[in-house]
Image 1 (spheres, rainbow, N blue to C red):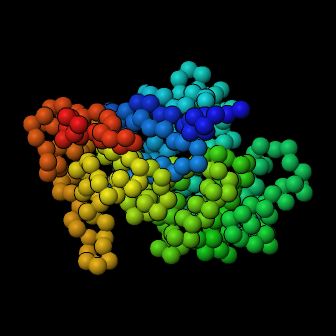
Image 2 (cartoon, rainbow, N blue to C red; image 1 turned 90 degrees about the vertical axis):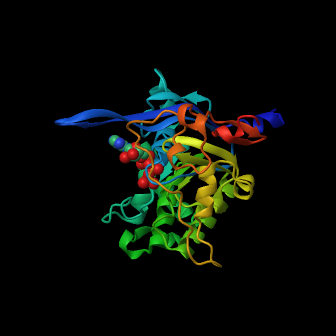
Length: 327
Ligand SMILES: Nc1ncnc2c1ncn2[C@@H]1O[C@H](COP(=O)(O)OP(=O)(O)OP(=O)(O)O)[C@@H](O)[C@H]1O
């Protein structure tokens, strides 16, 4: 029998995960772009880890590595007890692939406009094979109903649906083989605010009913707040803060998290506070020290020379910032 400790064992363990890309070439100097550097985190059963950061901060790269769509350059990913990085990573991934799914931002791009909804939803079933026609049709009907659509829609085509309905269809396809973990990469970013709320409610409802875990990627802290259990804040490919949701919003520790929160539009004010000054640093030539240093209002000497490690500053709270060195 499982004891309580087992039930909170992570389903995903990520340690020092890094991904470089070689860029340039054809007459231009070839350079190494450090898209993700030394990311370490866990995902627990039934939780949503929100991943937030500006464009280019490495969110999608992390998500793609987690479901085996992109190999890691360094570091380790353990999924459901299988280590999918390293020499036997491919065989390990084959064992757990059916438990992983990915939902992209753009439901238009994710669907072939000439395919019927039933064939779109059944794609993973068809790839796996071995289903009778009746079982396949029953499963498609069940999945449509699971995402709040009528089973009668099975014979229709994508253009007959709104953006929100199309995202529901994409989610139905992701659920076809009973995954346990889904990476939602900007899954509601293309929708208007009321549609966003509906799709987020659907994802949360499915999580409850099916015991799913999510990695929920978004650049918008307001969206991440609604769905997440814990949140990782990414800056220039590094996790700078990892915290339970409540603490992160009520008491942000990292100067970058503080700046992101201050930039959330507030209805009573009507305007967005200016985001943190300056530019995201180049991922090609990392300066020594903390990557936020040139933009950080609280930087001091040590920040310019020494990169801060992500470390625990309070139970369940990790920050990479020299301000907390003595804590
Ligand atoms: N295949 C690739 N080849 C070269 N560089 C890449 C590749 N994929 C991503 N990158 C670079 O890696 C960095 C991180 O990209 P990534 O897409 O992970 O960021 P992101 O935070 O998801 O951004 P966005 O919110 O705009 O989607 C960027 O500088 C990007 O240009």
